[in-house]
Structures are given as structure tokens and as C-alpha cells.
Image (cartoon, rainbow, N blue to C red):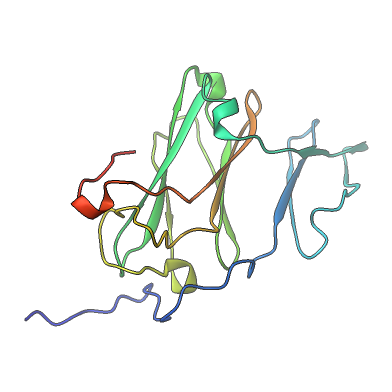
Length: 184
């Protein structure tokens, strides 16, 4: 029997982190200089007045992926098993102008923001560690079973042409019991 190795990013918790541990996030953007202002905390959902370049920053209101799928299709896959847990975010933009400018992954304990260069091709990989890397099993890629280890995570993907799109990580494949894996 092979000795089990524990990677430094592996979650050692025996239970999934509680829902609502991380506060909500709201995004504001300056129309002039395009500066991004992610706002988190207890009162994040209340309207804020953020000034930048002498103007009030615009609150970005997220839409469901179905509302923009004629311009950009977004999907994800959870990979890595216990030791190298990661979320891969895929996109297919119908035109270059619909491609994402940035992607934010909200997790159990916080969030990860990555800017997307014009030459970047999917996927964008968000490596997870500690509590965010909690997994019930060591399947690679994830079977998207009934346990949905990453339920509570949300992908936010933004481009000027499509606006802000949010995609919760709550996929569940009906064929997980048979071992069939659905590709993103």
C-alpha cells in the first residue's frame, strides 16, 4: 500500500466550512480610469458612494450566465483532488471585445482576483489552500457529486461589453454515480 502524502495546500479539516463564513462582495468601477473597488464586509450590500476621478463609481450589478451566453460562455472545473485543489475557469467569447478583463473567485475564507491579459487563453486557474481546499474525495477532476464541496464559492467574471456575470459553483452531474465525467 502506498504511503499517503499530505501536500502543504491540503485542507486538514474533517468538515466542510460553514456557509456564510466569508462576507458578500460588491464591485464598484470608475467609468473614467476603470479602477476596481471590491467591497466586502457586514454592510457590503448597502449602497456606497465611492468617489474616483471626481465622479461616483458605478456599482456593478451581476447577471446570471444565461443572460450573456450569446456573447460569452463561462464554465468551471474543480481539479487536483486532496493535495492540489484548484478551480479552473473557462470562457468562450464570441468576439474579442467580450473577453473577460478580470475574474474574481469568492471562496469560503475570502477571494482571489486575477486580471486577464489580452493574450491569456482559458483556463484561468485559482489554486486553493487550507480551508478553501476542503474536499470530500480525491477525484481529479471533480465528479460533481451530491456533496458539492465548493458550494458557496462564486465566480465573478467582468468585461465592459458584457458587464459582471456571476456563476455559483454548485454543479451536480446526474451521472456521478456511474463514474461518467462531464467536460467543461
